[in-house]
Image (cartoon, rainbow, N blue to C red; front, side):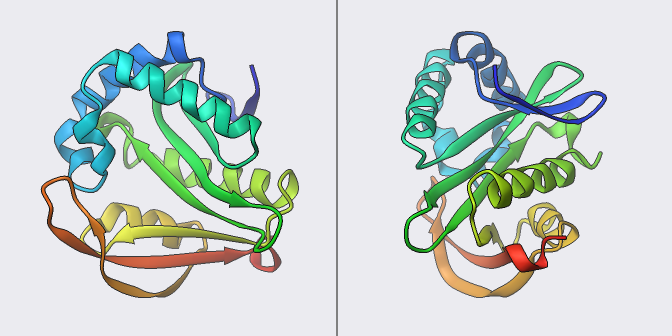
Length: 182
């Protein structure tokens, strides 16, 4: 299993669908309302099999080098995921970062460290030039994570993301360039 060790008890790893799927689904269940407020996929992740199928798809995307989805492990337990979405290594040399973390693990610096590790992978292993994070304006925690990780606020896109309930959210777009990554 591919793993990127961040510190003594925090790591990022390629998902193991049959093992991680049920455990991640339990984490989604414990944080469902919070996650569903900003992540439309939560509404369609209704069983552990849904999560297993998603994780199998992510491994195919990894093989095609079009996305990298990693499980976040805290003390050897999966607590969330982080991803490079829509990796473009041919023309624009950029990717979007997406992430989620279960409620009990928030506020501990886990996502900040995970974003720094993913940026290291993106700039060194994928030779990307730019990373972006899109965060709903009302999602203060996600905006704080992007800012703490050194991402630059490029602007706000009006009604750029749709929630599962059909409402639209304004989104802050952040970016980090390889030249800014020390």
